Image 1 (spheres, rainbow, N blue to C red):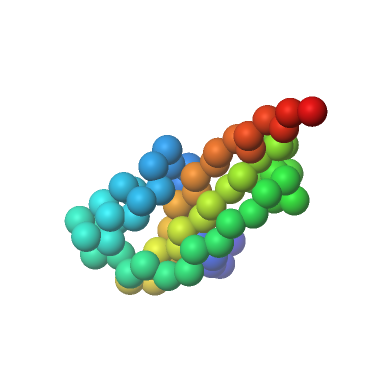
Image 2 (image 1 turned 90 degrees about the vertical axis):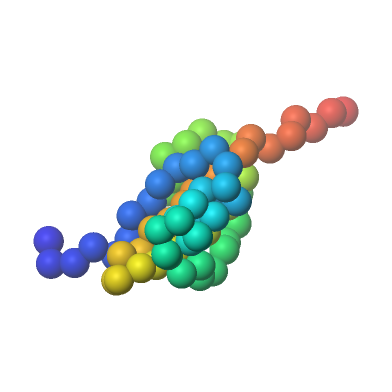
Length: 76
């Protein structure tokens, strides 16, 4: 391996985790992305799912803070 693109961390509270890394450790907040079942296989989780990822960076280290939330059940 010659390079590491980024590291993903699963978190239970995305906003709280972002504050910790940005305000506490000095990471720079970058883009936030969201996805659904189309990302379930990549994230190795079972659908249905909603995923929100917050990217942060410091000194060349890029972290992806990933929060998973189940989709609400649909009713007939």
